[in-house]
Image (cartoon, rainbow, N blue to C red; front, side, top):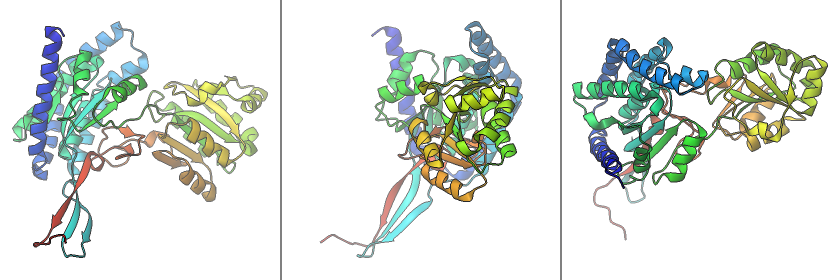
Length: 427
């Protein structure tokens, strides 16, 4: 191992040790003090917007030189909207109830002692992410409010912006007399830092990767620490035979086109055979007006060609592909059962929606689809912690153990049992 690699190894181990110590203190910090730190961070961001933008310009210039795609460049930009969302998220998190100490269940044992199940922090959470610099702030404030220390490992493409934001987080912690190491950014672009972090299971209790499938698979396959993740956002809309065509058109276009590069954008459209001939041409025309490339199965292709709408044949691989672009796959199905079976086979358990006026069909879909978020006549673009009233989100989990869907404060907690007695012994 080179001297440089040894230095990175030592750096990450020191960060993790400091985070563990900070987490023990932060777990007992008063709610008012945590809220004060979060609100102070919002003030610091507002006061330093121009300085943050100068750092962001460095990242944008480097990204353009490296040939980053326009969609990824947009995610990297510290826009007015991103700054506004960070500030709104911070203030909303500060206003939310503190989840710590909440009694989840109580039970009186036959021998008279009380058992309380109470909410507690997880401990130290490592967040590994790409592109969007707002993740630095979202994760820091959610971990802080839930009593967890955070170790942040942002992508190299947003390095300068992340360093600047992390410095403001540390300043807010220091000024409000909370442990300054309760939120730390790993200050290196070297991949060796990630390899070290993923092995520190004595100091770090949870890893949450946010980014492309390659990053998430690497983390999952190399971590010694439990990982909460989602690999893909293969989201499907099902147009039921009882759909309102105008409403369905609006929802489909929004789910696909409003921001196609994100994980809650639609990638597949299923259409019931009984409404396909009448509804699909109108919906497809609206999608083509938004420059969406259509890939259709044989039956859908026939309908589209008859209506003079350009589409290409879909392949088996298309049904399980996360395009993150203006591309949509279309398939005709014979029944709602076929739609549910398709989603449970090809989907990624992220976000799926039924478009229908039939409550019975909607109920069957909501129960039958095995995904973290299931919609009835609502755009899948709403799968987001802020939209769900969580203030912000640390990620979206498609796992089933511990947390599922957008992860806010409560999802960043574990629990412990408190047993209260007066001398009971077991015979």
